[in-house]
Image (cartoon, rainbow, N blue to C red):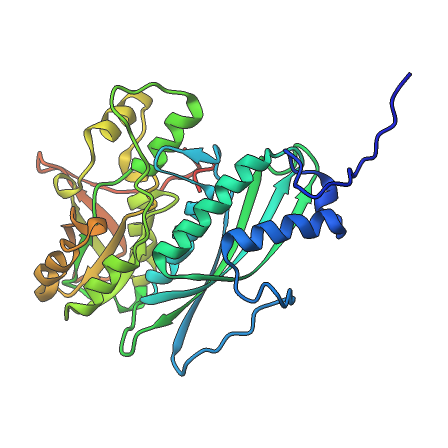
Length: 347
């Protein structure tokens, strides 16, 4: 004889796994939302309003949105929670904006262990405190098992742009130096190794990091900064090609100047991948007036996120877009974008 059981158990504490009832609009959902809000430290929790009302000082603001579907949820050097906060903060930083406010939308899969959710929320809270950004509104949905791969996160971010700062691909000028903030490819390869269960002799961790501190130092050192771009999907190659196309200018890059760790290089060679196409989550390129490149490097060297910065190339004085890569042997080739996706679900 089958036993009858209530599909929505009456209990004060949260169950060990996410249930569909927690997305149904009733007391179970409100209990879950209450824990999410308290863990993230969302302001105005008592009001439980449909949105946040913000006091924005008279200034220019930057606004961005992003979604995160990384697999696995936890990886060496980070997790989907810190990735969502840092990734949004970094998008604002690339606009020359100091991060101020975030929204956080969660799509939870039925059956997700509540302990995993708590870990992700705690990571989000730590990342928010570290970067000084405030989570002010959000949303939670629960979908059936098999529909969300654990957790999907959607964010929107608002940041304040400093007076006189103008950061855009259209401002790239001939003679600009291309400054890379550090070694490339660690995020994508760390995700791939974790997903595939690859056992490496040395620990390979994601380069996941917030970039506003490094950007703030560059903007404050007096260097004439024209454009910034973080290296996410498609890696360095995609970022440079996108900017070359938009600016209408050609870039010349020295392959020998691009730092790649031995772990990343070795794993890429083993798997037949090009580090230039592998994603980062804590690296960016800055296009700086040629006369100010030294000042920019000096400023970046004052923080952990930029201590490996180096000049990797120069913007040409011709109008033909494209990225030319010069090898140590004196040969040249075009650094092309990927035609497809070599590392799915890396952010």
